[in-house]
Image 1 (cartoon, one colour):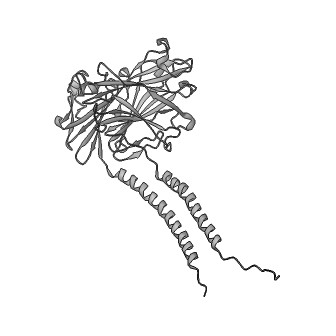
Image 2: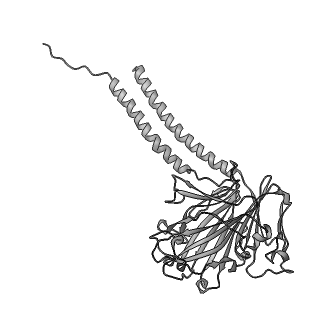
Image 3: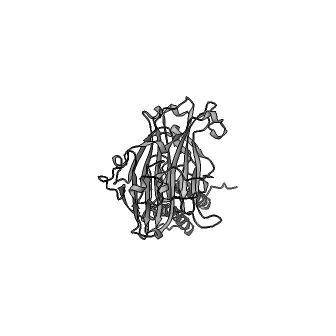
Length: 421
């Protein structure tokens, strides 16, 4: 019976232990990544959608182009209310209450006047913890004949008359509302010939659980967030070198969004070639308290509805500045009224060398609006497995190579014939 020497038994055991360690390393990586996903999906809200809450349309028909969408996101002990309104400049209002029975109450005759403060309320009023509104006020078009894509450095003569979104005619939300998908599409058009076959659309999405939108930029959302995709489609530009900027304003209940934080990332898995994310956040001044609310986006827009890599174009924001008066939104004036902290910025699309708008006559940009700290991107399970295999395989090869060298070095050498002198 052949007996394996103790030294070889030890080396074989080392090889087996090395393989076990490698398998355990990959297994733990998979388990950890899976647990991150499961934990992210644990928190869920129950969503319900209603159009024009409390309105008896037979007694009071709405003017053309006016609509109010209310999404109620019910949590375990709180409620989020999203209100998308097309009266005046289109606006999305987010209200967070500490009650599971809070409701929206609208005084419709006063609400339709637009200048009536308090015509839209959340009751009970003392349950409101946080409120903020994002308003789309203007669409700027400028003649970038020198291809600089820096409108703030251009003379006033390079700018065309801006499109005031408060003057747009908006489609009926009832025709595009999808209660099952929790989405709605709000499309508007200006009175000029440029919009004869074109439109500016806002696609609204509410979310009950963590996930990602399938189309780029695939922003990570959670149960405390909603999304707006802005699409400028088929608009006839007023020059052959036209580029666009979108003016945004936010109005806050206690703390408005006052700063934009730009975060770096080493992963572009979900948004190819984009390694940054911008966050327009609301937080107490001179405080270490967490963020109260946010608008989050990636600095990229797309020139086609189903984009490929070449259709991406960078975008950039200006520094937020205080605005002296409330934006021309019927929703904002009805809920906030009076003097509220308002800030605004411009989102400029494209950079030097990129095609002008008339190349495709299409532009889309996506922003996430939510409560609390913005979602943070992390590596997907696939990337974690690739990293585990990529890091673990060389280590395994080195260990196995070292063991093999030791085995060969310690193997008994055969007897060599020595001549007799």
